[in-house]
Each structure stands twice: as structure tokens, then as C-alpha cells.
Length: 352
Ligand SMILES: [Zn+2]
Image 1 (cartoon, helix red, strand yellow):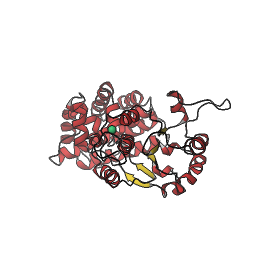
Image 2: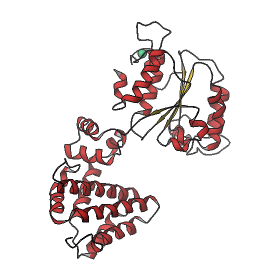
Image 3: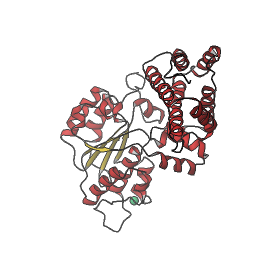
Image 4: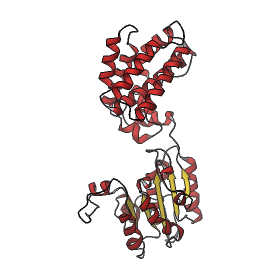
């Protein structure tokens, strides 16, 4: 069943399948939710199901599940069905060889008004070529700048026949309210850790790597799969280094901050992970729960035995504050220095 490729999104998939079964697709959908949760895949399956010719139902009906092997299904999978158009940021289209330079300017990081005008004035003004229903997938739709969004409004108000627009957005709030209100919202949620872990293990990750990647992924299978084993190793190592910092070794703290503060993303990943590790420590102190970070279980046990729960909670709050500061452009080295200083100078009680 192809729609089962979209994992852990029963509500969203159920709504789409019901619409296909009724033969009543909306003219515009907004697929919203974290990156890497199956939104684009669902958009492709929807286009396939509406145009599939693999079933016994007759040629005029949508199918609830695309067969995946008929001509339209294959063409849509290969991105060369003439009635299914994918729009992305100009820069991404250029990289895929689907962008032509205009008036000497270089490709934009946005979806720009030229692209939307092309879509509206040319592509949508033509008749369908061969499909049952025409699809425009804008992914990521939240990369449309305001002019581009305004250029799309009229199309959403007076949609062409037999056409469905799918706006795929990890940050639907970046879209104008006038755009959002003209689309039917289909929400995609974060994928639960247990499902991510089993997918990652099936993809060849060790149990420890799978747990760590799931914990860092924010519920996104795409992000979890993108985390390389070497990267995960380095993060485990960084947690061990943080766990091993001594309360009276200020030089060691500074060396730690310098070693892990070279890069903002790396520093933020480390802080996110420290927060997860401290959550494991708290869970160990409360006497249960299966830890997210298997490879640092010894450090977790040691911290659980030597720090009070109040102290662990205080350190977690410091980590959360640092993560916030990193998001607001604080220097990564300084943010990490401040974090370790606060770890060892502030105290929730006398034990740490
Ligand atoms: Zn098919």
C-alpha cells in the first residue's frame, strides 16, 4: 500500500484517502508540519492516486491507493508527468537544471514572483495534457516571498478546473493569512521516537546510534537519517567530555567551550543533546525510563548518583537558555563558556 510509505501520519493520510475515495479533491491543500515527516511524499502519492490507471475501477475515477507501476504513476515518480509541476526555490531549481536565467540575475533563495506568474499566466492557462487531474506542488511553499504569495492569491480564489495545488510548508506561519485561509490544512506531526528508532535500525544504524539520532531529530525521519554515524560518535564523545568536566578545572571548561564552539550548528546540536542527556539523568534518578543515550550510560549513572535532582534540573535550564542564546546569534564559544561557568558556579544545593 503506497500510502503506508508515509509513516505515523494516520490522520493526514486518512483525510487524503477519504477525499480520493469520494472523488472530491480540494483545489488547494496546505500540508504543514516538521520537515522530514512525509509531506512531499504524500503530495506525490496524491497526484499519483488521482492520475493512476492501474486499477479495474475505470479510467475516470481516482484511486484510493496509486498502483505505483502504471505509466502515469511512473511518470509522476520520475518527475516527468506533464500535468504535475513541482516548484521550489530558484536556487534549488537551478541546481536541478530547471531554471533559466532572467535578465542576467542569479537564482534567488526564494520562490519568486516570476515563478508564480509563469505558473499562473502560462502553465495553468493551458489545458491538461494527458492526466485526469493537474497538480502543482510548491515545496517549500513557505519559501515564497510576499510578492510571490500575492501573485498566487487570485489563483487560489478562482482555481482552474481539475487542478489541485499542494503547498508544502514546515513553517506555515510564514504564509500570508489570506493564503492559509484559502487552503485546506492537512497537519503532519512529529514521528514518535519508537517508530523512528525501528526505521533507523532497519536502515542499518546500531541501537545506540538509532536512539541518539531519533532523540536529536525533532520527530523528522529525514533529519534522523541525515545524521551520519561519525557525527553521532562525535556527539557521544562530546557528552562524555561534558560529563567528565571537573568542578575545579576552569582551564578544562574553557578548552571544552573552544573545542565545541567552532560552529553554531555543532554547538546547538551539542546543547540539544546535553538537554536530552540530563533528562536521562533525571529519569535514572526517578528510577526508570529507558534512556535515550545508550552509549553514555556509565556517565548517566555516575551523574545520577553524584548530583541532586534539583541540580540536574538547574543545569538543564542553563542548557535550554544557551540553546536560546545560540538561536539569537550569540557567539558559540562565549555561549558554551558561559554555560560551563554557570554549571559549576551556580548551585541548586550543596552537593554538586
Ligand atoms: Zn498507477
